[in-house]
Length: 196
Image 1 (cartoon, one colour):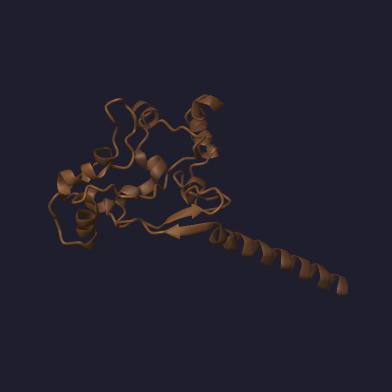
Image 2 (cartoon, helix red, strand yellow):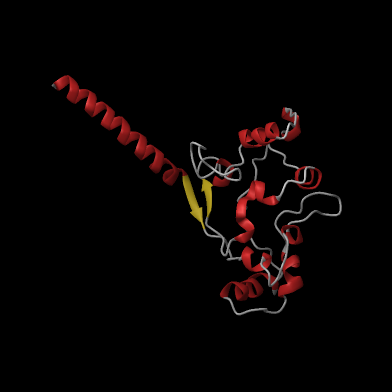
């Protein structure tokens, strides 16, 4: 009887430790920050405005990906208010009028040792933005930015699931995610393709 009770206690303790680790580790590992300003991608990409991803996240004249748009990009449409939302008022008062860049927290910023050429993937391979970024262009608000307390990288690099099981292709930007996509497409890769 005691032998069975000991086994039961061991496995119950192991199961409890796994559950606590599985749920508790991410909560302890990541700190959350709100974006400095709320932004609706859905409003901008919807039928009324009809913008495409590349209207704000395009390429510079030299072919480099421009990344997050500057306040100058926003000023083209928002020098004067177009609506009455508090977010637009903040945009104009805090950033456009004084000419201050918005300190966005970048969900998809890669580690310093990784090089990701957007032009190769978007222009040459014709991969849609949604393949890596998911339905981000259809969201009404920006979710909190989650930063790893140890590495300082965005949680989006690892993805929402520690295991990586059952996730969408855009839920993670680890090296293995890139390699899996390359393998699916028959692309031969070497370390120096991404690590320079």
